[in-house]
Length: 465
Image 1 (tube, rainbow, N blue to C red):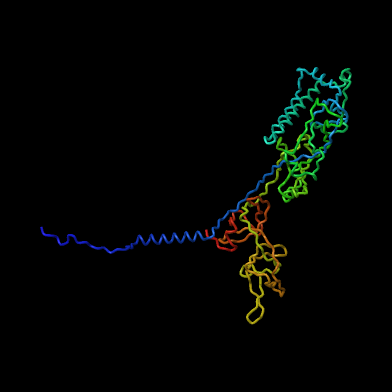
Image 2: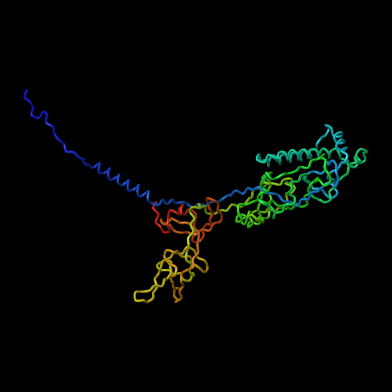
C-alpha cells in the first residue's frame, strides 16, 4: 500500500481569544453590574417613612410615699397594752382605744375566758379577709420583709378581735376584784387608728429625698397587743385628716411640669385597683431631684397602713401624627416682615435690591418659598438669600436689611421627589417617636412621605428611589 502523503501532517491553528457575540454581551453585563455596585456603594441611601396617625403611651407606673397628718400617742404609764379599736377605723372622742394593765392579770383573764370557744362574727371574718386579700394583691417578692409585717399585723388583728368579743361588756369587767389594775385609754380626738410607726410621721413634702424610696433603709415597727410598754412608749397612731398626699419621683423637672399642667390626674392604686382623682403640684429637692405631689381628699383610710404605694397615672394619650425622632431636623430661617412678600408667576418671593454695571440701583425677584408665617413675620429659607441683603417693600421705597434669624424644627417631605422642609409642632415625645400636630399650615398630613434619617439628605436634594 502506498504511503498517504497527508498522513502525519500537523495543522497549526491561530492562538488567542476568539470573540463572539455571547462573550461581548457577557462582558457588557459584567461592566454594567460593576458600575452599578460601585454607584450604589457611594450613593446616599434615602429611606422614606409614611406618616400615619398614632399615639404614644409612656410608662406611668410609679412608687410613691404616702404623707398624712399623723400623730403618735404615747403611753402615760407602764403595763401590758391590749387594743380594742379596729385598725383602719375611725374613733370618736372618748372611744376606748386600748387598756393598760399594770399587773398582767387581764392577759390571764382573757386566756381563761377565751379558751377554744372563740367564734368570730361575719364582720370579723370580713375584716380578716380584707387584710389578707390586700396583702396578697400588693405583695412583691423583692420586698419580702413585708411578709413579717403582715404576719405581725394579722396576729394583732386576731388578738384585737378576740379581746373585743370577750369584753363585750367592758364595765362589768371593771367590777371584778382581780381587774382593779386595769386602766382604760380613750381617744382624745377623732381620727383613724393605726398600730404601727416608721419614723415618717413628721415627713413633709419639702423634706422628701430620693434616698427615702430605698426600702433597705426603711423600718416599720408593728405595735402588738399584750406587749409590755413603758411610760412614754408609742402605743398607737392617729391620722386626723382625710386629706393626704402621695409623693412620686419623676424623671426630670420637665416631666414634673407636664404633670402639673394637667391640674388633676386620675390615679389607679395597683394594690386593689381602686381609682381616685388627685390635684397635682411639684417640688425639687436640694439635689435637683424632681417630685410630683398627688393630693387626695378621700380613700385615705383604705391605705392608712401603707407607707409605700405603687400607683398608675391614667393620662390621656397624646394623639396625632406619629413620626420617628430620626426624621426630625432643626434649621435656621430668615425672618422678614410679612409686608415684604410678593409674587411673580404664581411663585412667592421678595424683591432684592441689586446694583447694575453702571452703578444704578434696581430690584430682582428672588423666589423664596415661605416655610411658616405669623401675623407679622414670614420665615424664608437661607439658601436663596444672604444676611445683609436688602429687600424692597412692594409698591414702596421702603427697604429692609435681612439679618434676623430663628430656628424651627421639622422634617423633610419627599412627596414631590425632593427634600422639602415642613415645620412640625411636637405634642409629645419619647426616646424613639414623637407625636406631632396634624393639618397645620406648612406642616404634615397623614400619608405624607418623609425622610427617615435626615443625615442622609440635604434640603431640596432630589430623591432617587
